[in-house]
Image (cartoon, rainbow, N blue to C red; front, side, top):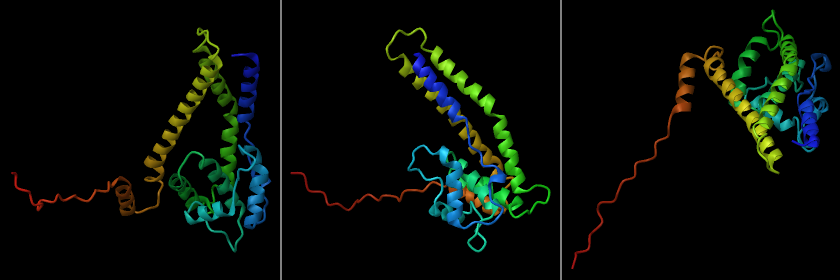
Length: 235
């Protein structure tokens, strides 16, 4: 790979692993109206947008999250610090998981921690722990990405072709895709095996009904052949 492309790739990797985490201390200690919530999220997560016209959070999104039980309803149209923390989790999860999966992940957390239901651990403290864990993984994540790039580059080292950079970048992209696929599959399996079973507060009958609903195959209506068609006599 030519030196210019190598530098561009390294800059891309360095910028990609820099996640602007919202710290609990950044969130106002007063409840916010919806417009204030969207403004806050936009200002702190603006760098994560791919395109300038992308929206971090909209009123419609917030209303849909509440409607789908991803977010507890506001108190007199105002959202607390805990609401903001949940919205941050939703923002990152929604890029990888379905609404149903996010609901299954967050429901036991909301039932356990929202509004200080568990006096031993607050939602804010949980969020701080998660951020600390993610920050601690940055160096190893960068090393893994750079190793994938080195592997993709070496795979075509013996090929004398003007398209070598194209092949290398395709291999690198495919390796990243495979990594994401495996981790997404792992997340979905964890949700199916634990969050929807062990951690869910649904009754055994509700769990059985939900399982039946997701596995039931709709049968096509039986097509009856017409047998009363009069045959013309053969001459």
